[in-house]
Length: 231
Image (cartoon, rainbow, N blue to C red):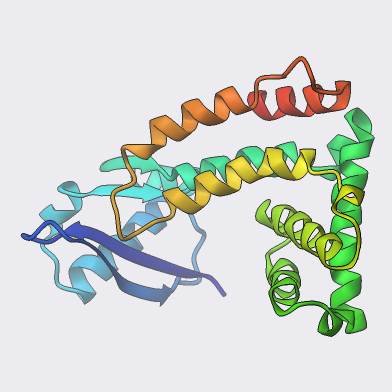
């Protein structure tokens, strides 16, 4: 069963940024083509919620880069969600199947981090760890496997595990530090209580610089950074 949600972001006369979930509705049992998605959007906003049809031309639509969604909104003003773009970049860059061929040590680190978090959760050993570490483990497992933040959360959990039970030097921070910049960008760009549009270009420039290989990088780190830059 598929669902569609529409959220409105707007500014009040006193310049307060607000967001309201307008509707969450079950998508009809039709092919999810651009035309069908557009028809359902119009149905929900005009017929169900009572908006004037002209309103659809007076707003900016922000969505992921799904081909059918982009096609549905082609008649209107549309922007790609920057968070989704970063997620796509990291999802490709952290694909363990591809990494195993190019930089196997990075792939092994990602798989080991996920396995460790999963083991600690399933074995019940997280109850012996500090509360904040336990919460990180539970959140890491709850993340969708298709979302790159699962890898980020798993590495963050592992780093906390090592801080709690062993010497911090046992966990090499280079991969986590690299991904943390993208995590910071997503967290700031996800804000709905403050403007974020002006931050898009700033974060894009910062992340491009962040992905430039450094002379101190190992060959695998340089390769991983370059793959991320071109993803």
